Length: 156
Image (cartoon, rainbow, N blue to C red; front, top):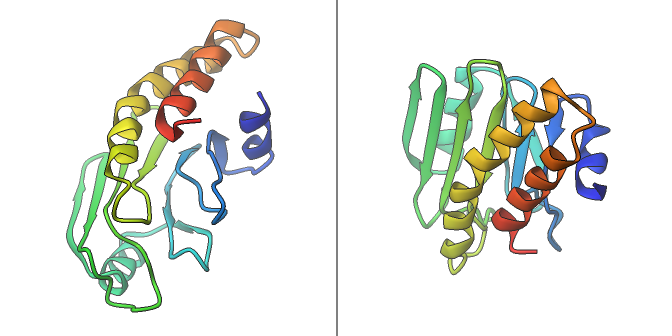
């Protein structure tokens, strides 16, 4: 419950993340909109518009940006445009009909591809648990399932 409680204090976060040594979130579940993890020195920032997303796309040398209905996918090259940034890998945001969005980040280090695979596997599990939590906030099974999904995504 500690992980969920920490991020629930932020008004725009519904649940989740495992903060590593860099202090960057691995998974963030948002109430609405979507969030983008910037380079390690900048922490996490919110992205509210397609224009802002496109600016970040250019600054990180992201070679693919898809804005289709409720899904936004950003795929970065190995070498960001900004040499000070260590961002690489993929960042996927999936919007749900009820306004939830799940941001799943790959690791900043190039060897952390397995982490990304775990995150993608965990995202739908976490969403299902959060739907149950919304319907019944006191359901301990839903809390356990959400924490299990976070553990799967972050390997903790």
